[in-house]
Length: 103
Image 1: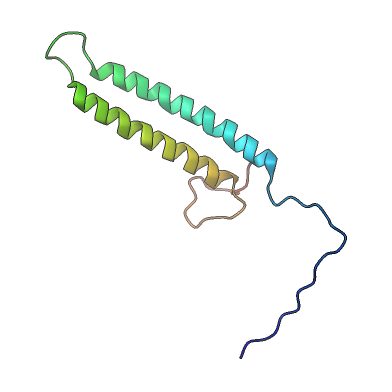
Image 2 (image 1 turned 90 degrees about the vertical axis):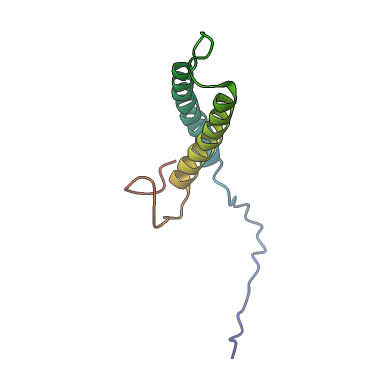
């Protein structure tokens, strides 16, 4: 049988934000920094596989598909790393050891 629960409403009107805006801003800056580093790495890899001579290196189609896959992977990786690191919930498989809330 269900137990009744009493709910009280705070009449004082405390304005408590449930969002840590400092963590949101720090996470955005950190995600942008990680994305720039990974994109610079991707540019280096991309420039190493193309060739200015005909019939050398990878084809344009392969390059376009590889670039698209890499861009999606960078976006997912950067946002997942930063979101996991800045969250207040400790997931069972964190990317880095140690305390989970660092932002």
